[in-house]
Length: 333
Image (cartoon, rainbow, N blue to C red; front, side, top):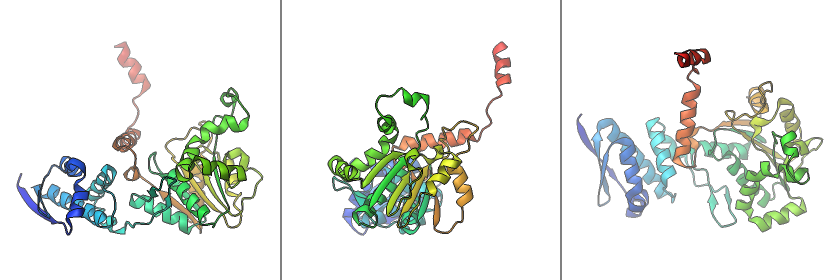
């Protein structure tokens, strides 16, 4: 194997410091992922490795430096994402990333799209009346939708935020829980509450909820209503039936937006029920003013292991399951 050396020039030392990270952790991640050696000499980075690996490392470093020059934070997730883009030959997409802040949390933290997929998702929400966000866990589908809802509410483009989820176990098991119906379904709505607490703070959220400006309710509460001037989010939509999804979509009123989120690989419905989310994607594909955004494992912004778990399950789903009869035969022998 022939080793070569490539050089990457940084325009500013500050950007180089940002890219390196604490104790050079970001550089070490690139070295481990791409099997290269990276040495810093002033404002230059010397990359050594086989030709293909060195070229990928150079493109990764250039992408990170361009993000640092825009004032973006370079963390583990960003480094992993850039490496993934480079390996897929999509590192040119980094130039499309902008600095748009979706929302500011109660603690002053800016919420922004962290991947190209998330950015497309946010632009689709902004542009369309109905947006369907489909993707695996950790891709920010719900959190970013809530951020967009809070931003619209603060800008007074809507008067209400309505968040809803189907309570799949709304039968016998739910009946054993204490309290009235709202108390019973609150555990299913907890992720939505958590996102709103983060954006608004518990006290402000409580104030708006008491006024009726923010409503967090099970999907069954939507029946028979027309929702005007509202930002409506249906979460965990893979667990709706076809009838529930149609009912929900037809609640849309004037001046409202709808965002539907879900993961079609995590359907908890009985086998004889078709997922309303899968059906809606099929029926509504290509309808004007409705966007369908598909996020992937590359858009996962949680722990690095989450991405690995998703990829492992995707690979396993493509393999045929071993025959039960064969297993019984092997045990007998």
